[in-house]
Figure 1: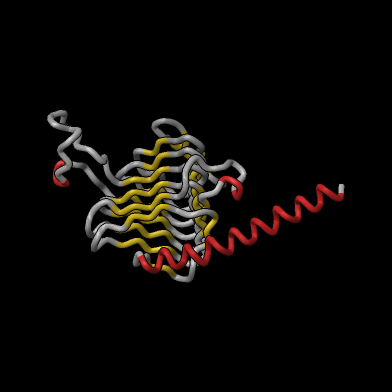
Figure 2 (figure 1 turned 90 degrees about the vertical axis):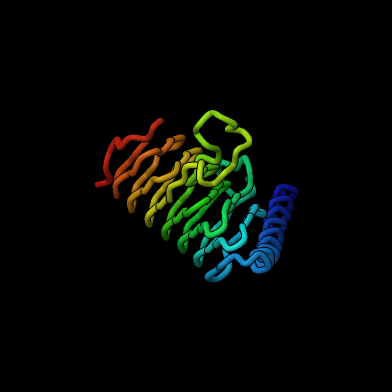
Length: 205
């Protein structure tokens, strides 16, 4: 029992030191990369952040970015990834939202509201990444040929693990997206949606 207690104490001390280091170095990294911050997010592990020239990433107060499986029950398959893909694109994450191993890519705009809960390995993107037309699809990256549409996730939305939120989608306030859902169309406020493609299967009382 003594050995177990000593080991558990050592783990807690290690985790506390790791968290402190991640938050100090993460804040510095965000500052030198011109990430807009309202206060410093809480880091568990290091996210991957890419900011194109003349684009914007804004992180609200109290945001948690979890990129380390030791700090979330489900674990994550990758770190948080936040990327703008074109000049003038924007990613806005509202205050007190939590992201675990989430990927966000914006060619135009992805906006996440306050108090959102984005589960492990959720993916959110506002672009097809490649053109739909078959001719030279692999190599032709002309922006005018790649379809994009903004994504808006309103306040207090819960997106379950492994879900994919695709271009042009708006998810209303308080909605719940079931694990593994692929959301291709708008979801109204207070709705529960699941499936592929995601459909409304209930409503919060």
